[in-house]
Image (tube, rainbow over all chains, first blue to last red; front, side):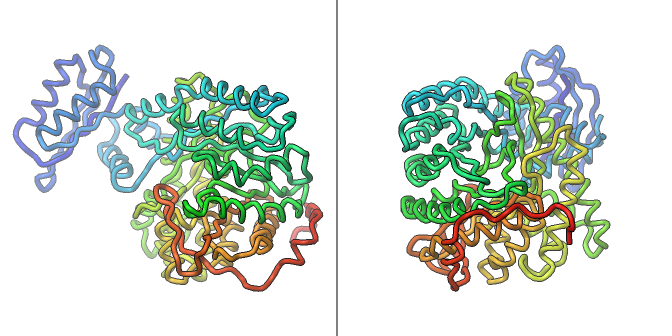
Length: 89
Length: 452
């Protein structure tokens, strides 16, 4: 299963490092990353593969959300299907 | 990977524009629960519902978490109880409503619909018993919703039923006066009722449906409103296209949720209802969409045309996004549940007569409207008759969900709270319809040719 991880919030040092470390610890493979900073506002979207993940998508979502809170960020994890269906016929 | 802008746009729709799946509704047939005593029927009904819908709420919450889409309501609709209870010796069906309420609470759903009767052409004894039980059933239950179909394009209008329903609404308002007439908020009078509607209070599981089915209702007035802000001053062709595209995205999400829920529950997928259902929250209003099209206040001249465009574009956009579309499909205009409608009514811009005109071109009908407490049963019946005539002649579903505000008058407010919101008491015509309603009988079905 693939999921989209979205990270938004005020830019600080080490956001990508911390998110990627958590994903690596859970054996979640990152397939693609896209990131931008607009007026100090950090936005990152990642496509991740949960095939070998130790956690279910719901558990991973909770873990990332908790990590986000410690850095003042909003991190959301959603199954990829929703975005595919909404924007492709 | 998906375009980053699309991903962020979706998140904004959910976070800022109130995009949600309004309801996952499980339809359950209760035809096999018939028995000779109300007590036995109640027991069978409770057991069947709690078994079939055991996992409904749990699965809904799982899907919500995995996809990050809010699913506001999980609900149940059942076979019209007038059919299920027809063989009972007793004439009071209230205990069955109590069993439905208990089952709803056990399953964790917030509403259960189907305390219903279909009497467009005539009454069976079971229909009469059910209709007479409605006031007490709605007064002593919390989550049970009731509906009665009094007219259809094929059968015409059952004016005896129309008369009876005016009285039932008055009685229900009196019995639930302590809770602002909440009983009436759970009671709908239909013309051309549909069998697969997932929305309350009018949902029931029609006899043409299967054993058990999952229907989904989507919503997103806020998303449409936001999209229209981008095309200020542009011609209506652009407006219609923008609504269609937005409706496609919203419906696509509903289709995904419906398929997932159906697969996880092992229950066939029925339909997606392509709807714009407002809530009292700011930014989730159908009235504000109409105003965005250029009307100073919803209810002024031009409102019907704006609503016609909106309703049609929502269907056109949604229909391609789902493999089975049904239910009521269109824009809803419940006054108490729409922040913009409430504001328009308070300003005196939106009247009952304009709302009636609006129901000719949109999804349902006169919905969640508070009228003065001293409105007579005959006047309420006459309002129902007018609305039924619109449905019957135009081959569409119409409905009346009206709340007589006991001991209140024009200018007062009725507070329901939650999704049902608050309703300003609106004036009705003061001239009598008493002799008109007293006639009874049936208004014949209309011609289907020579249309003009």
